[in-house]
Image 1 (cartoon, rainbow, N blue to C red):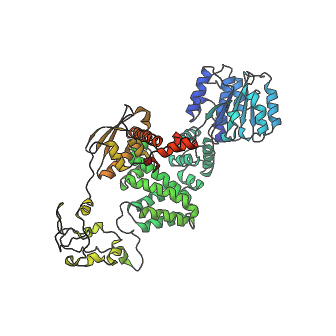
Image 2: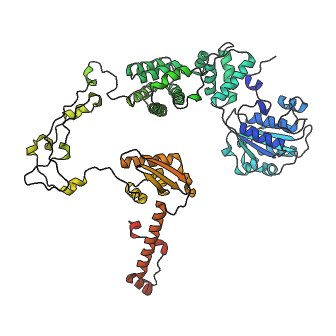
Image 3: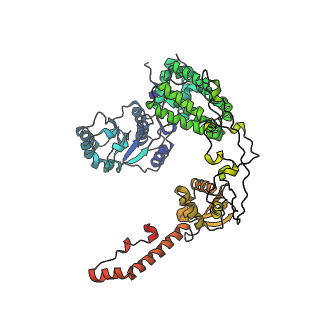
Length: 594
């Protein structure tokens, strides 16, 4: 007996054995059970997600000898012949090779006759978007009002190319891509049934490589079985796919956690020496960072039986949540910029060095020692120069003649002691710069300047206060974006310090979301210089919101402007002598015009 590939051998023959697409299965099953049958169906989705498979199962459900059912028996002549592809009343047409109007006319002519063996004549047209415009036009009338014994099932990978007139005549279902865990689980069931040994790591690699297509996954599984001589092992699958060994990726993250630039670049060179593409390395690294972020924020998302669970659990405490997010973004940008790099290795190494340079835990220069110059990484703290004590000025005091007042730059804390942990590399540059002229002079010889007590007092930074006037506060802050939308359409119901309780009208409940609240809290915190919290409730009216107040104020200004314009003698002269007309919609208050 000839060998049958796994993709054909394990093609589902009923809705119960179909993997994924629960939303489509539920809709079709309910329609079949209630006998609410449409005359035309359209299945859309990428390759290998089950469009043709669902079409054949639907054909069996319509023609099963046990009656129209969502669970065809699979043993009657109709079911067996449909599975074997020999059913007379099931016609599968490949629109990619039958694009002309003549092929469609032949189908439409045969559709007028009653079915020979089954209950319905079922026409499955695959890749229907390949039909010509004249072919679509020829089938429109029959597609809209076919004979009662005819069912059309269309399938396409590109629904954008299907005319709208055809889409409107069909019941459309969009099939989703398979998730890697779903693919790996199904491959595990297949291998268990086939009694073939396997590694779970290998199945996960195949699940990711299938890119959402179950047919591609089964084809890759066939290839992996042949490559491993009857076994599916992680090393063989990784070599077959050209995937990156996970141990190298864990080494990269370990070197990043240790801030060891030398070993980091050495690991990158090992990847290049093994012939692993930089694009594949960055793709696998981004996938690993995604799993690491899941381990940190949602530990239950990764089960303990996962082969990488222990390694991820060991790495999770080495990085902060923010750092993992930053590394993930750097990896994505580095992969996108590979085409612009001088070569692939340069793009990979620069991405890794960017991760090292932007690490939040680094205070000094990167640990990349320059040969022959070991002193460049050490920074000498700058000695603090003590200036003369500033003259204290009371709020209502007037300086006496001959007194010298110091500028703010001269006011230093004599108790300040520099800390070596807070010194940055830029300190060396600041040490070489000459001091400003006003700091180089002694305090008694500082150049006098015109002095205004009120202007100097006004420059003193004081923490803003809030008196409960919400619209006035918004005018001072001048918020924008999501924070401004929430603030303008919310009424202040209560406040306690920097805790604000806002009420949003039901008509603007969309701005009461958490992202709007977080933006407003950030803006208020920046303005007041302290952490602010916002609590939002939905209800009430929109009469007292800042936006409503601004609208009423503008309406009042507009009415005042109209009255002033109508009372203006010059305007009245233009109207009386020249027949001029005032257009109300062009009148604007001066504040709006400005």
